[in-house]
Image (cartoon, rainbow, N blue to C red; front, side):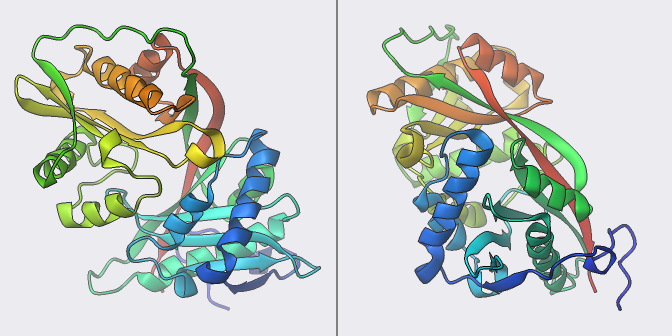
Length: 334
């Protein structure tokens, strides 16, 4: 038996359990199956469906994704699908990410079996042309996903970074007034040059050490951006201050089919001009645009440690609706 690498948790040999039945995941045949599983997971954990079919399809067909290599289904004792997992890289995020979807009938053993696969796939990818010997594998789970969280603990995932999912209704109530900031102008993306400015603003706003973010090339980011489920450049915008781009907002329709809402995928302000009300200017614009498009509300996910951002959202009427953790573990090559 191969010993666990230094700094890694022991493998399944130390856990008495039923061996999960893992099978290849074929997007053409299994997208609806995984979507139904995710909906059942959402209803059990959150009390509402959030995941859309388009989001599942987009993640399994993202640039560089190879489901035959990177994804697995887990079958229960009766032969029905009870879980799924896939691993990959996201432009601008350091390390690897595993999406773990466990339905209500999945067990901890099913979860740890899928995580065994994810860790092995991540380990297999290390030591390649770039010579990386270690990587971080992370997973995002809501507070209500008890089986998922137990499986992650069993597998040595820890160091949780807390997030809050917040929402605001877009009913007939007047929108909050944006602060008046002389020289500030919000404008939607119109052409390729705007997209490049958007990417530069994103890298400037998200420092490499901030919540696992890292700078990426425009080419890599553009492939990810264009394939992001629900992406719509007309709902994205740049914020200029005295003709200089200092902020951006990325709004997607990833929850439109499930909740009828617009989702704030990213919002950032250049650190050099924070504290002047520019975040509120950008967010109020986004709220008005979402209402104009008939969305019933807006949803976002914010780092619990980002006290300034959370205070801004509360002032504009947003409320916490669920809690999430990003947990991670180290994976070594070989």
